[in-house]
Length: 101
Image (cartoon, rainbow, N blue to C red; front, side, top):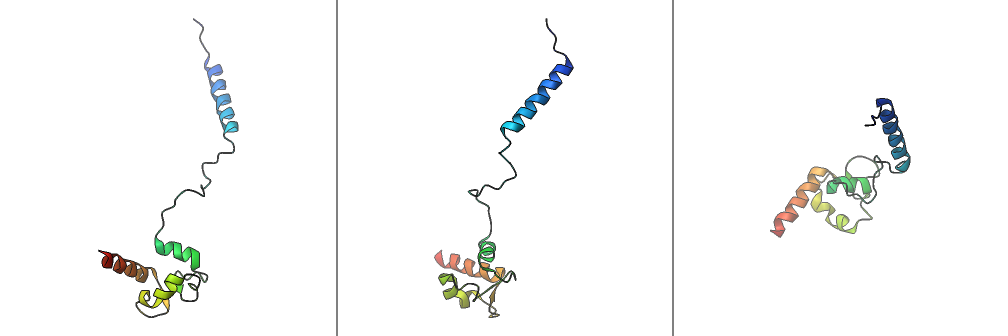
């Protein structure tokens, strides 16, 4: 029976690994798939989309492009500070859900 040496086996494994890296060189597992769904809260997405002053709140001026939020702004802004924060937004969403039940 022909025995394979440890040296030959090691070289074969290393060469197979290098070949595998060359074949999959353009497949970066760390790249973000633009079609992948990334879970995020609704308010977080609104902040990403509209919070131009990066205050983590939303003003009426920042929401001018969103007709629905502009119309509901005074209802959402519970403390009337002219800013919507995450807590106010979540309370508003909860009240909408509750009214639907």
